[in-house]
Image (cartoon, rainbow, N blue to C red):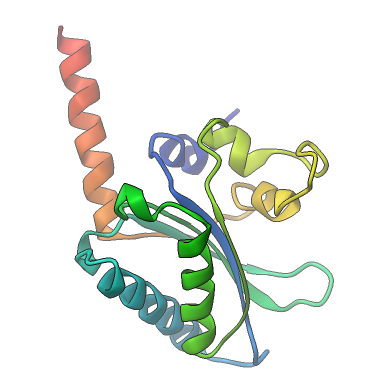
Length: 167
């Protein structure tokens, strides 16, 4: 049975998937979330997107091996011309500029469906890019944070679905 989170997330055309770590192990949660918001505000400002409209999904997670907190995110709503590796590097740089640790950001693979992307098992992608991490994104006790921009996108998708069903 598919989780409700996965069902909702697969309805969105995502542009980026990322994993963000922290330099310091002990840090208040509000500070962690603040760093994420600051990073996205920097990206939105640079790419001329209104931050409150930016659709994103964030999940905090504790690492299995060392128990360190880190974040996984899905992001969309940026201009199509900016969906490229350069923007990935810009997002990573913005994270580090705001005090974050290591960042991995990838262009979301549009050829895979959302469920396949967030729930695939280790080793199913030849080069192994973030497969293990993306598999954990949709499993276990989910603490997803959805932006108000994403909620508006999902409401819009619901209206499209309702119109199709009414026809």
